Image (cartoon, rainbow, N blue to C red):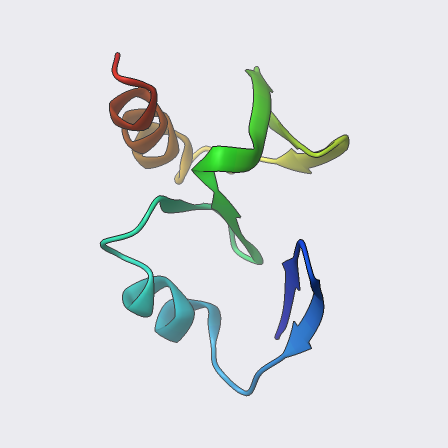
Length: 77
């Protein structure tokens, strides 16, 4: 797994599930089967797409309710 950070990319030997469990109390959410996003860097959500720093990532139907709930709680909605 590659973690993209603002200081560079980090390679780790964890599964998405393991990383998600470690980040469960933080401001992160799973948006599909291969991506966890930091809610702080979301610039927009439209339909089934989330924009992170100018990059569009698809949101799976299964993950959308959880992502939306976490994002709304994060922004205070």
